[in-house]
Image (cartoon, rainbow, N blue to C red; front, side, top):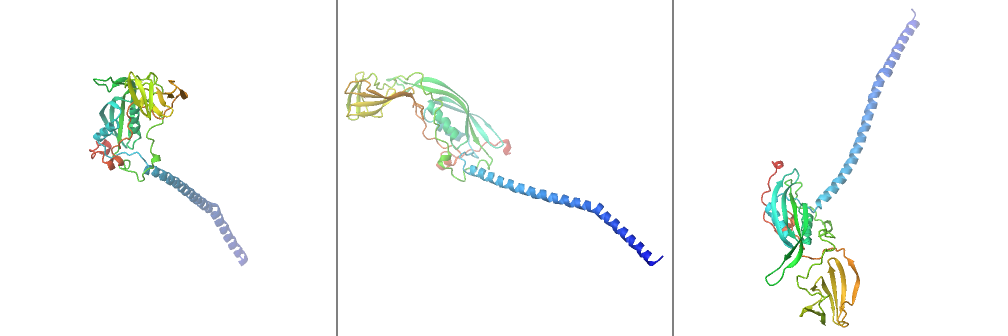
Length: 353
């Protein structure tokens, strides 16, 4: 066999080996490697997308955390870590110091909770409608966490202030019963003693609502003149001297100045130059201004404006109302004022063990 044939055979063998090796690499090995590479590229892209999503979620969570922290730092409600029943009783009694004819308070139990616990008190009594309303308003809107529930109210007509030599005064009272819950928390994260930032006055609720829902706008019956006040409708105006109006009530001369009470109203103004007396009436919710002129002898010279129903921002006073509430026990204001003694140990709950 010649050298040319041998060389041709060798080249053919090398060519066949090269073609077989190329086929094996391109058709068997490279597809698997390409698939692995493509899967790795997809995993990297997925990780990049996940990182971008996490970054966006972190930004949103940071904004929500900042807003939540701002609300927490400016909160006005305080959950004391330690709260004694004696302090709560003193606080509730202080809220009822004015306008209450009877106020009975009894502790019915302590309810434990995983976040907050509370004392429950059963409260019954009799009070002026506006005083009862002020009591509930101050209890639920003060810095302490108190809840009023199961409230029942009914009207009661009674006589107060009577003596041996004078008749009593007939008043309309609210006979009520309710449950009051006083909350506290042994969780240090919840019962922080004070705010990091003192809230502005605008952040606190109003001292009282615009309308007292417990007091009727129009009374069913006008109250009688149990205080023996001057009744300008029937008692003659006999003189106007300086800033004093003189009325004849059953043979007794009564002197009244601006601001003093008459039956169903008050003296608004005494004009000595015109000998005229102006009286503002409140006839059970229907208001009227009346001028009485001594010179002409007319009993009612002129009614200024029409009679109208008055949507009052405050009720017709029937009794004293608590003007400023004492601080709730466990609040920074109570600690600063030293209103209460050191709190007794708070009953521990099963969650504290």
